[in-house]
Image (cartoon, rainbow, N blue to C red; front, side, top):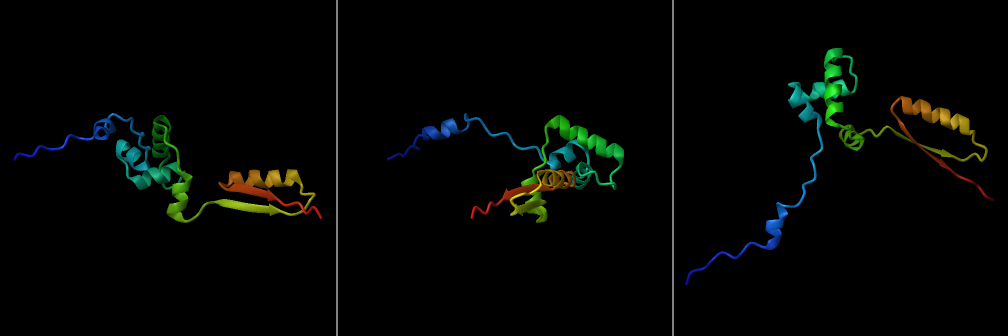
Amino acid sequence: MTRTAAPKASSDATRSDAPRKPKRLTQRAIAKSLGLSPATVSMALRDDPLVAEETRLKVKAAASESGYLYNAAAGALRNGRTRLLGLAVVSPGADAELLDALEARLAAAGWTVAIAFHRDDE
């Protein structure tokens, strides 16, 4: 008695036809395309003064042209810092201009600010 292989399930045939999710562009890919180390690319994207200005400009141009976007969540996981500040405002007459200025100053320094207001309706 000769056995024949079972026909492949139809899902196997369609699996290769399904559109693939495009891979995210990484700093490593940018480094490879420019002939630089991933560390140099990372430092250039963060404006590290140890990287020559010409190299920084070249890296930033390549990143921009290729659509590279920094993944802040991945960075936070890697270095253990989120740069997120939570602010709970309890005062009913909180100064909106002061809070706006505080948020703008922190944002300029690379922080994300989450502001929550609490009303005591007693």
